[in-house]
Image 1 (cartoon, rainbow, N blue to C red):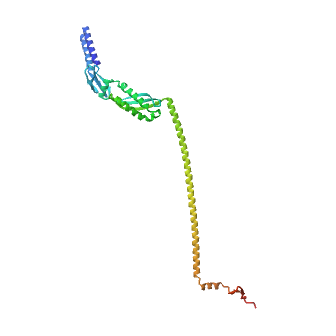
Image 2 (cartoon, rainbow, N blue to C red):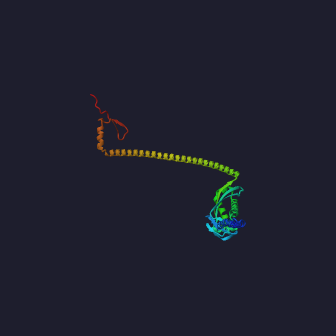
Image 3 (tube, rainbow, N blue to C red):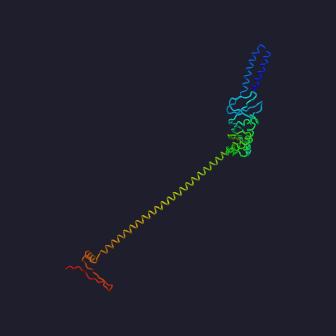
Length: 317
């Protein structure tokens, strides 16, 4: 549209110069006409970069059709406004308050995009600055609302949950404008120095307490293990003593059995010897053992007197 206006201006100026300067009329007409033609041709060209949609307007009115990326011919009185259809990223910093009234500074990353049809409608209703007009206020509002439901202590642990909740609330509202919300990422959560110092002190105290508990548990475990070792050693000693006593008892029993067996064998031998002795053999042994002397006394059968039989040795002559 601008180039078309410039072409008209060039024609007008050429006509004026041609009228005023008769001597240079032909040259002026040629130069002015050439410039006007160039500007007119340029005004009929609409170039749309790759990844963009061309919004065609006629004297500011949005046409029903769009033009695609590349080189396009348009009417000289029409203009082309480009809208980016690629996935775009925006970084947002939001200051919010937690449920326990702690000030929280948040850094969010938002990815979004629009298609060709949405580009035309969005330009017609909102304009090219739709991010600041439609998206940013809603993202900020819903982020503050989600953060206010959590305490400062639980925010960091629920970062993914927060991102999902913010995404769910924002995507519905900007969807009315046919804006596609690709993702919402909560990249950083920052607290005031006073709260950070308090949290660090609490963590240090917690770590100290945990360390003491671990140390005490270790001492208790060592004492328990020592007690168990003592019990096991006592049981082992008792078992050893029991085994030793049983072994001694077995040895004594074996000895007693051996002695009994020896006595039984000896008795059996004596019995065998006694049974093998006849009266004739006994008389034989008695005769062999007799020294040739007769007894000098004898005991009466019915009296208790002993009678001397005299000496059996011969007296010397």
